[in-house]
Length: 396
Ligand SMILES: Cc1cc2nc3c(=O)[nH]c(=O)nc-3n(C[C@H](O)[C@H](O)[C@H](O)COP(=O)(O)O)c2cc1C
Image 1: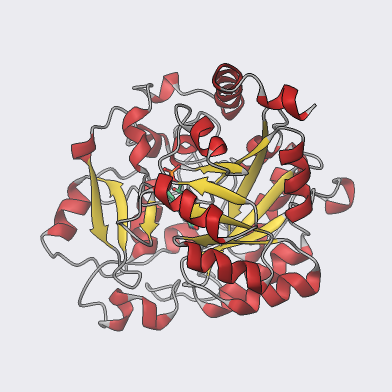
Image 2 (image 1 turned 45 degrees about the horizontal axis):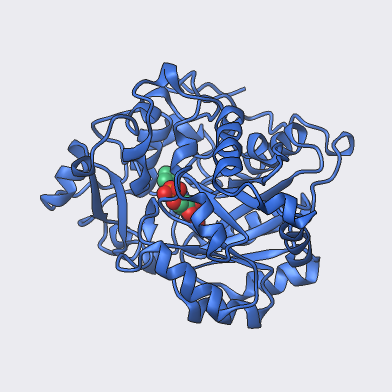
């Protein structure tokens, strides 16, 4: 067993160990549900809607998916998403099986991004298919190959879109649903000028696929997106501020008590895209044009490195998309360093804390006050019962 001298106790699942053990025996776990188009239509016909926990790399969403997928309420069906980003095969399998054990028969998907290193993209897709996840959702770039792989393996597929045009294309290519992600979302944002309410209207008009609304959604506006025709909502940042996820307590605290002035947009090393994050010394340094080349990640990935890569740069992104690597490390910053520093080390000075615009509305001020996912979902059910008392009754 390798040791990780700097590993933080907050990480409940070790990221990597030499035993390469996947602790949960899949033959003892019931299969996950399939979240395909007809399953979603049946949920909507029953008067319920989806509440999807958005995938959050790097490791920000670890430990959350099963808690979401275990929820089957009067108005909401919970769906968990495991992020495949910067996970070795065992870690990815463990996260999926952990969620499967927590939510027997529930809906648990895997989030993949076409912007990541191609071989990891392929191997993570293969693992998600082997584990028979409920769906695979693709963000940050478009790979049509993954849709073909999903179709061949009979795994439902979803695309993340920032326009009606792309939604219509995904429908043509055979997707089961689309996630319309607006400018209010956390992390990388495709189109900083496209607010969610108008995007949902545009996407609902452009496709007959079920549409899930994402970006800045919280308990106060869930009902409004359902009225606009969405089959569900996706929330991510709010689940960072829950008691159950594996993120470091400092990471959770960074999302509490924030004002709009404390949220900022940075230029990411990923294609120079804009990304939303909590303002801190690291984002201020980026704004001044400072660069942060990759450092050794041996403390996290262990002596074997990441997928066998032992260099400081673990080549997490497709080469041409990484401004840092493309500039021979003379510009930009290492995103794996910065996100591991925030989520795993809880380094409030050097970490990058991706977040959505809705965190300014989180009422809790301290980590000790944070609700569990279960409590949060019960509160949401209660809000919906008041906001739209007739919906479930009307569906019979
Ligand atoms: C910390 C963080 C990391 C994220 N990472 C990813 C990711 O790896 N892939 C992805 O498709 N979306 C990612 N997102 C976007 C979320 O899945 C989600 O769609 C969006 O944040 C929803 O908005 P909300 O956070 O305001 O609820 C991330 C968001 C955050 C806050």
